[in-house]
Image (cartoon, rainbow, N blue to C red):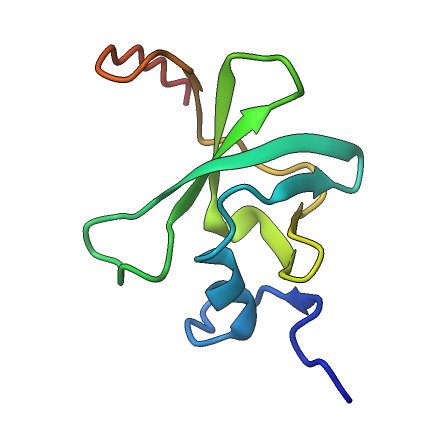
Length: 113
């Protein structure tokens, strides 16, 4: 049996790619870059102009004991491995912003551009 979407590279502009569909289901997935472990997908962010199954950003809980979320644009995703529940970022990914994790109902957003 051939599995076509075990690791599917993300191709910018290919909105119907299986990688993008995998990205839409990536909450809880491990996030890595060529330099190593980055964190875990805490949440998916959707721009108002995008389809609900195409996240525009990933909110990644950085490190193992950090209270920091890294906001990573979809364009920085290199591949998604649904079977291994892993998102791989491009080399030297651009971080759009950082946010401090806080209890529900108490927003503490710190955006760095």
